[in-house]
Amino acid sequence: MVRKVTILDLQEKKNGQHPITMVTAYDFPGALLADEAGVDMILVGDSLAMTVLGHSSTTNVTMAEMLHHCKAVSRGAKRPFLIGDMPFLSYQISAQRAVRNAGRFIKEGNMDAIKLEGGHEVLKSVQAICQAGIPVMGHLGLTPQTATKLGGYRVQAHTGVTAKKLYDEALALEAAGCFSIVLEAVPAPVARIISQKLTIPTIGIGAGNECDGQVLVFHDMLGLFDQFKPKFVKQFANLKPLILAAIKTYCQEVEARTFPAQEHTYKIDQTEFDKFLAELK
Ligand code: KIV
Image 1 (cartoon, rainbow, N blue to C red):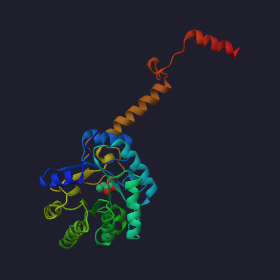
Image 2: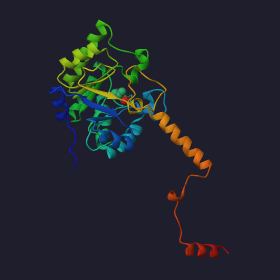
Image 3: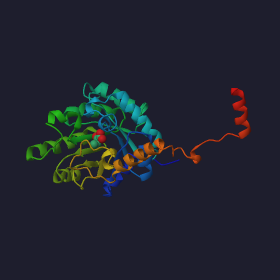
Image 4: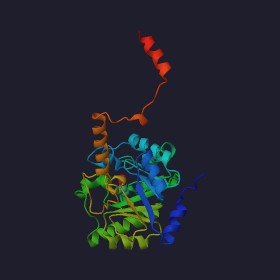
């Protein structure tokens, strides 16, 4: 049986200054790949609203859709610590509703923890979910669910005042019980100070290389989503041209009747085939 990554392992990595690796995954094959590659954590991110479901914002995705993808990921990933992303309005209405929805990620989605976005405005929900025994990952900086309110997908905490606000919110989330916090689109020096101050691990995305770990969106890092490319995305592979070429070759071979070839085709014993033809007369 595979030994699962635990919160203690993640904390040990921070304490030993060994960077934590995290990627998003949304389905069974993606989870198998991330697990085999050896990542510490998989986030079933609500980014799937855009990368997989074709919405223009993460706000469209529902609890039912998130749970559907969490279940698939949990069937594929056995070693990484699994985090389900709580969708917009599943944790903001009341702490009670937040606990109920967070519980569904654990009981139905087979996740190990949940992530939610925001600072002071979500503290009550964070506390209630933690008190229910569910590990919570925070998310500060660019919070895509409220990107409209922030004026778009843009760098956050880039003034003295807003950097201090982010710093205070990170401390408040830690005090409320979060086991880790994602920092998205935050200037690297600000993320460094916060990472040094917090005792829990920070996971950066567009927050420099001095966070305690990094996360990237699966489709972004593999070149599978080119509708929107933030500055902080590095494409570690460009799979789109490979996939396009493969599908085009398939179409050409079907049209030329060179696929399926003999090796892809089932045979029938000649006597049985003759019997079949006789049956048709
Ligand atoms: O939904 C997501 O993929 C995320 C990451 C960008 C951290 O929240």
